[in-house]
Length: 419
Ligand code: UD1
Image 1: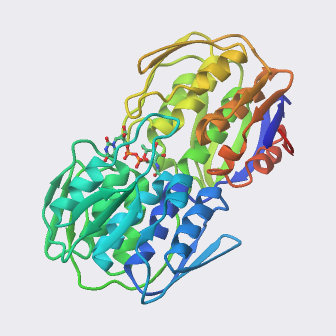
Image 2: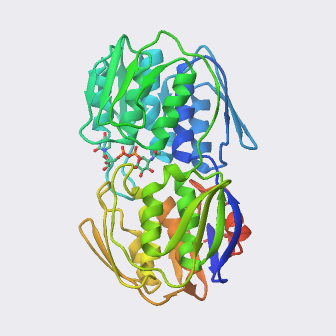
Image 3: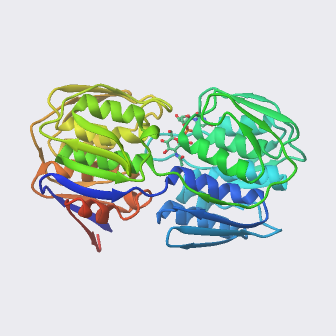
């Protein structure tokens, strides 16, 4: 059992370096299936999810070495196109190997991902897109079996700009015959990073980062070196900590252009941010103000920021209405904040957060990555000790979270032990 223990310790001060983006590196790793040879990824964070994807690639026959922030993947000529249940269950994002496996090997056997703490997460759009490109699927015994003798470019119109479905379609279309156009594509910076990686490998992709992506299929791709973009959600986490604790910090390597909407929201709440020669600068003084939040696909407020914003609103002056528009049931951590004295009412996909003067430190439990981080953030502004149990969830998405907070002057420590 991993716990993170937090004591309030006044304003934050200092610099912290933002790691590579989890949600980018996992997809880049999946894309290594597409070409034989040696790939080198730089700025790769040490995360449990990266270890899970490395284990998945190894189980398929690839060699993966992660040392420091460099991840080397050697993709041999023959690989086994199977993603077993134990690994997909460990990390749902494993489903993104489906597109590259079908494109490169013409077959794939991938365990069906289950639900998770924020409601069921269907993969219908992933499968429909791949079917329209020419793949066929059967499901039996908890596995999806996919076949594709050859993929042929087509026009795909996504019902919703799903990040994972866009990525699977993109990684399949790069080797399809002819042109594919993905309409209503997800626009997240991680999609643009994946497209840059694939283009460097020899793919021909235009428009990634916009709602229309055009891909001209090529016959072959080659391995490359690539530096992963910084993690905007990790950056948001430290800005939320700043909002709650006050102070002045610099987030080295953070990309302000990936966080426009967040920086605007933070400004509405009284956290000043701006771009800085080394990344992003932030300052917060006094009590936060409230604001309303509505999660939306990029460039809207990311659903992954939401728990962090709710922690901030819990101690802000006024009432904030938070609408979750991406995932149903992503409010479980609210019960934990309420245990810390927050005044939050949830109904359907809304939360009404009435800011209180002070939270009160308490034992709480992390249910997922961002909710866990949000509880640590809340603890920075609470009276007394907050102990966040099940902190292993946080390790899925944060590299040296405790150490980085300590570097900013926070009184935070990790405890490992039984029970
Ligand atoms: C990714 C991110 C996650 C982030 C989310 C939204 C990774 C590893 N994870 O998840 O951190 O919160 O984007 O920004 O990158 N949907 C369907 N059918 C599908 C696919 C999705 O109905 O086939 C629905 C989902 O249930 C959800 C919505 O579409 O309600 C958005 O999901 P999606 O954008 O696909 O998120 P992920 O790629 O799973």
